[in-house]
Image 1 (tube, rainbow, N blue to C red):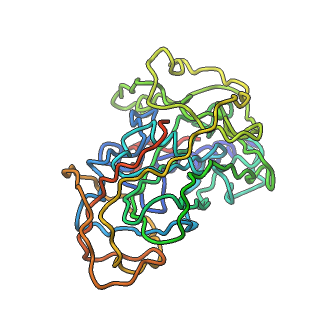
Image 2: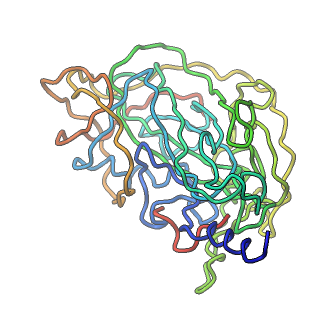
Length: 378
């Protein structure tokens, strides 16, 4: 390819804002500091894009999303010009959504980042096979657990990790990106057993397979940069992030803990100290580790729930995300007021005026932006 063509391709990859990736559907909490996105390299350390106290879910004016047990919930994100990596989805009670260990103990699903999306031009090999620009939506589904009681406010966590390519450097990986969406579970079949995490492999590069294309590490927590944060310099866009995380060739494989047929989930939790974080000079990418042998996670269904509500408006559909709402600090709610005179929810509705506040359900678990003001790299 001629140099001019390569420059055009690179410019296309850096043209979008540096959101890199974020949860689009169901609507994420968003945040103010990072304009909606949540990148570990920019200083947003999760487990959500904003803490529960700042979630729009706390507002009586914010429409609530209702889901049923056993429902296949549509989840969507945009590729945003970046190839590869994994997506991890987990669900916990809303009042535990600031706790990394709770999410790590309640993982529902892993899938590839490029599940059914890819570059706009499949013949463009400037950055490798099927690694070109393109921002088409990527989609998957996640099953709402059947062991969640009625009227429980829950939080879905979405993580992208193991993605590449940072500012046109084909041997670099991004840090982790986080997003969360809050909803209320009403209706559907019940089951006491806690679901085990599953992995759905196959992406644009390795379709119908049990692997994904990725860079860096296949383990959540390896690219959270510990407790380090960047020191931005005026006029220097790259100083606004600690990325890239690791250097190394493109790889293929399954998520850590799922790569040998094991159902062992990630055990990573809050950001590690500086000594455990990738060096600022960029760490070398390790080979994908073998799944550890870990004891089976005990099943639990000991929920504390919101007072039973048998009259929640009928659910219809999960609303698509538009713009991440500006989060405001709102005192944490304690319960969801009982609704009246409406049939049991069967699907997800467009909530309107019912002032529903988040739950304080304390069920037991077993322990476990718009974009940055800079071009989006690949």
